[in-house]
Amino acid sequence: MSSSFDAINYSVRPSKSIERKIIFERVNRFCATAGIKLDGYIGLGSIWFSDFHIAHRLLGLNKLICLEREDGFSRVLFNKPFECINVIKGDSSVTLPTLPLRESKHLIWLDYDDPASSNILEDIKVIVSKVAPGSVFLFSMNAHHKITEKDEDKVQKFIEIMGNAAPPDLKMADLSKSKYIGTLSKSLFNYITHVLISSGRDELFIPLFNIQYADGVSMLSIGGVILARGVEIPSLQSLGISHDDWPDYNTSSALLAISAPPLTLREKMTLDGLLPRENKLKCSDIPFTIKDEQLNIYQQFYKYYPIFNEQVLS
Image (cartoon, rainbow, N blue to C red; front, side, top):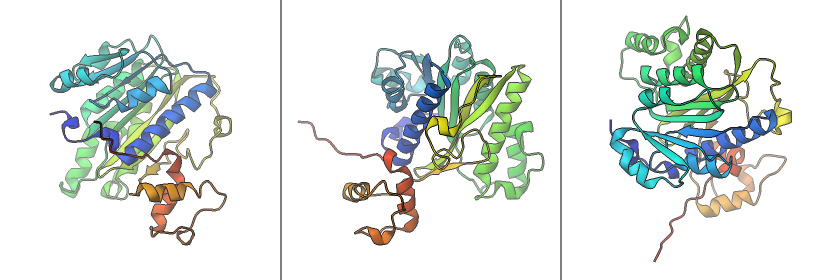
């Protein structure tokens, strides 16, 4: 499989950009409140290294590890933005088990382009069974609903991938377009719990991320933190964030859906000039036409909404 950066510029996807900012803000808030000091970051950087920039600048992490397949290694190495990034060549299934995950607390974000597979589940197993308590991890994957298989084949294929983590009473309706992503996230959280128990660990897994976003293709990001038993779990109040902004905190049943409406710079600046406010903006409050749903979404995520500009260098 060739590197996806040949087809996708990961630095200019608006919904992904919003998700990235939300994730790092959550990590920053949670670790500061829980008294967790992260020692490093592990990710799949591609040639853009967007998350590595934030891990280094916002979280102050100086031990950064980028895992890259052999076919894209040389170009990724060329584009590495900081000396403190160690680019390791090889598939994550080969390189992850060699890392000293137990020695220090890490933030780990494996951002795949592929749908859930046995290889991805094996990576999850390695991380959940080996990371040090206090480590934060998440996994992003393609959650696009496919309709190519026959009904009976879809159920069987899902069970073959997820194994005992799949719902025991899985039905075709659970894999319908409207329910597929919920079934997938539930199964992945089940898998994390199963790995934690089967590996003999006596710690707790606290869900921190259950996020759906789409820049054309639907994606799912799930994950959390492993804490020693007896450690106090911060409340949303102590984190200084509302349930509306973090509905998926410490639960695997709620999902945060991100969808960035297309806006011109002038439209964005107009909306920003009217926010924040106690009562939600209505379409009648603004001087241009936009759908109610798009306006509501923008109000929810306006603090994270990116601005992309073309810069001409002479």
